[in-house]
Image 1 (tube, helix red, strand yellow):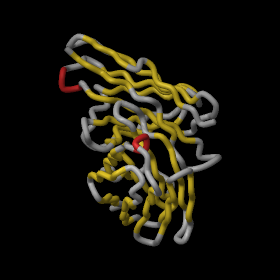
Image 2: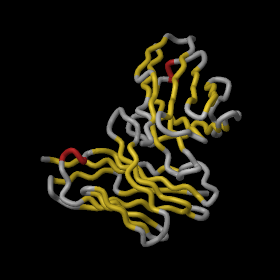
Image 3: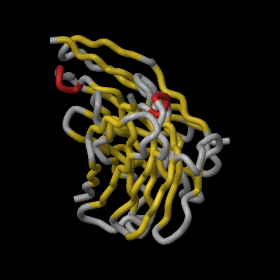
Image 4: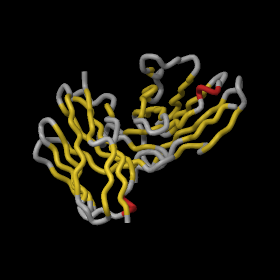
Length: 116
Length: 110
């Protein structure tokens, strides 16, 4: 149990375009979903927290207009990187948690974004 | 402010050489301490949750312990497939965001 999927696993896009990443909890309902960014050989950097049906809460320094997060249902959250630039290239990881069961976060496999 | 540090930053072991990884934390009322394993290019994989001092949990060659200030991940007779980055995280009494440590990169040589 507690499986989280992400799609796509890899994406290459041109500078100035937008790209959407999906995060799904497959066998549980996620009251909260999180989006992280990870640079090579660095730990996870929390970008935003989203609760189903509510606006996402962004961490300091994360541009909400650039990284659009939608948590439309208890099993789906999306991250859209708008007007992507090469500096947005990174490894993006989502996680999901069901607070009615426990405090653990379960992570997706990650999405490698490359902006050319 | 809740904080997590991990040591060592990197650890090289020979196969079969047991050791421990440390996670030290300061948090406003610990709700849970979590250990994850992360392989390169993948998302973290959940290992353990510890809730109170004195608690221990085991899984195969791994054993996690918790005190009021730190947690240890003991690795007994490691194998090369145990090579990964091990991440520690805490959540406070409000059960809000995780605070992750920087991780320990473990390499187990055959």
